Image (cartoon, rainbow, N blue to C red; front, top):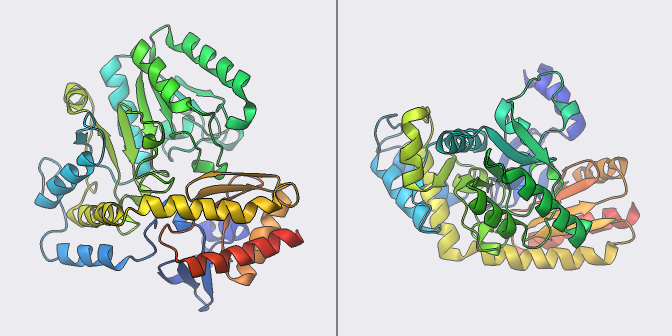
Length: 402
């Protein structure tokens, strides 16, 4: 039984949630208690839990075919690949098959090393890109991996140049980065597009961060890999967050919201010539990557985002949430930051954050601590105004009393 499992015992202190069902912006536990969800399963169910159109697409696909070939394609796979690449800049015209974000990042790093002949890869401290030994090395803190070291070598972590650190700090960051790239031995830089969603810090980069990094990588022959696993599919107020600075990376990794949580799928989207030049030297296969079922879910998910311009909802509701929370800044809220409906609420310490989510659970609001004292607020982008207000009323009430 799950109650006796190691996983369950280890996660109880994090409000391990035994969910019985979910619909839209609501979830229910095993005892039948209803909660307003402000997590979207960490940026997965962007269109709401169990979106009926996405689920129906899966049901229809089960009557056609449910598994693909490692050495071939299925019509729904080809249709989705065309639809996805058409939604991205023209240069990004090919996809790899993957089952999720970790696998996609792993693929991208393999491609980068094979394409450049270089070994070094740069990531950022406090970022999260997956659970493999390579993806962990990009951003995981040393004390959290000391029992499983060594990780993959020649992966370098830099400090993330946050907006609050100021202009001088950003200038120093750019200068130091150029000093590293000038030797032309760095294969790639892996970064989220100006905001850290992984590990829950919700740190915002200094304005122009991604554009300046793109300039330097192009100058020195380093590839730019943008991780949009958490930011993709309308979360930040654009269909893809690279649109905020109009940056075209060499590769973009996608997962999480790609199928709205209906089926496991991930991908690296890049240039077909880049991929063709490296595939003979690396093993890019995935037995369960891009099953026809997952592609059916992903295709319908993308069509809904584009049809309903969900990113506009995310931008408007995100601004509304920030407006509601801003009066508490300087009192119970130490720091408030975000982009679209990816919002970080910095509290005075980890204990306060812990108590806040405990009380929220009691009152029927499902939220999570991101990193230490930061609450990462990520409601489904399609949440109704009524339910959003109900959730905010609970949250603001708790914060005022903390």
